[in-house]
Image (cartoon, rainbow, N blue to C red):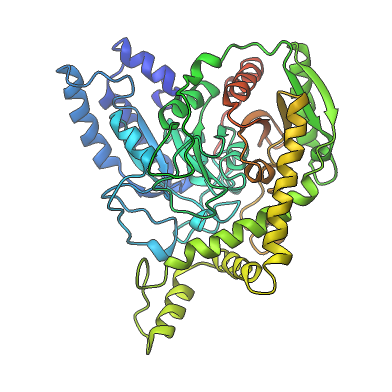
Amino acid sequence: MNITELTVHELQEKLKNKELTITEITKAYTDRINEKEKDVQAFVTVLTKEANEQAKKIQEKVERGEITGEFAGIPIGIKDNMCTKGIKTTCSSRMLENFVAPYDATVVENLNKENMINLGKLNMDEFAMGGSTEYSYFKKTRNPWDLNKVPGGSSGGSAAAVAANMVPWALGSDTGGSIRQPSSFCGVVGLKPTYGLVSRYGLVAFASSLDQIGPITKDVYDSAILLNLIAGHDEKDTTSSDREKIDYTKCLKNDVKGLKIGIPKEFFGEGINEEVKSSLQKAIETYKNLGAEIEEFSLDVAQYALATYYIIACAEASSNLGRFDGIRYGYRTEEFKNLKELYKKSRSEGFGPEVKRRIILGTYVLSSGYYDAYYKKAQQVRTLVMNEFNKGFEKYDVILTPTSPTVAFNVGSKSDSPLEMYLADICTVSVNIAGLPGISIPCGVDKEGMPIGVQLIGNKFSEETILNAAYTLEQKIKFREKYKPEFKK
């Protein structure tokens, strides 16, 4: 039995039946990290020694009956933009290279209450800005399916670590597709919850009206379990929704008879790779055979969504990153003559090229004379995007699109062309603009054996619907039984 290939619910079953111990599970994962991290480069901070020590203590407490929780001793990886008390939180930036958070993010607090074990902080695009995890200050994460390809971004470290079986599951954050796109590239399941369902307290902000924390897992059942743990109202987050707690595992019925699925034709047009289209057509046929009602319709948001997203995201990034000035937070230059030079050199040296690009763009669209033409207009178009989705959900329960127009691309192939990288977000950004939930699950591979993801979008707070739709397709396709990462070099 290969422990690291098991899902979390399988690990729980083995623990319950006393077939495995917490120390055995943790050691299997730390050994796997020691074996694969040199190739995949998924971690910024590895906590293998601390994890094994923690596992030993938790195991002893479980044996004494002091801890009875069903998640006690289950390991996890955390994206490096979520605050972890006493552990570095770098956002993969030189600006926060030595920042140790004095408190835990709410989602981390929730995991700690369950006595889960943090295996480490996972690599990402700097301040979550990027789609390939090539914009990290520390390292470039590789895709476990093919080490010459990117894992996607910005949660590339999280998706790659799950795909490589270095963690059983992980937390990522999604501002414009940063959970779903890397999950698609790495052949794992990525869920972006409805805006406000999961607390953002302790998540280092990129774009506050778009950011959302969510799970990256091996299968849909694990995704439902992790959502149970992290969802819920938090008075420390003013955008947190106060809703009744739901057990999302109860909605996994493996039945989609009568489910109305809308296929927006704009998402299957020019720019979508033919093999991606073909794989999605098979998924659509599978849904038809399972009794779902499929209909093509027009969702005229794709052409506006990308420009709207980048204006709003960059404007909010410009505002949020103003605090990193060499005085209040972050990196401080060593040589400066006056205050202006301290600001200028600290920010110039502390931020990478992609972050600078977005700050400049964001500052421009917020500046006097351009605010109405760009930022205000983008907010108006945002309302139009929401209205288009609302119209769609009057008729359909779920909207199905590709997660990404292509499979994972080669390392370095797009890093010199920011616009090309931005266009790769075309299928995911509208979900964040409208604050909707979306899930990506693997539905096949291309001729090179690289994973292809299908995205299911739901109406606000309809996670139960998209989780069940994803689960039903997953049970039929059995992707994990057929395909495994090959670590091709």
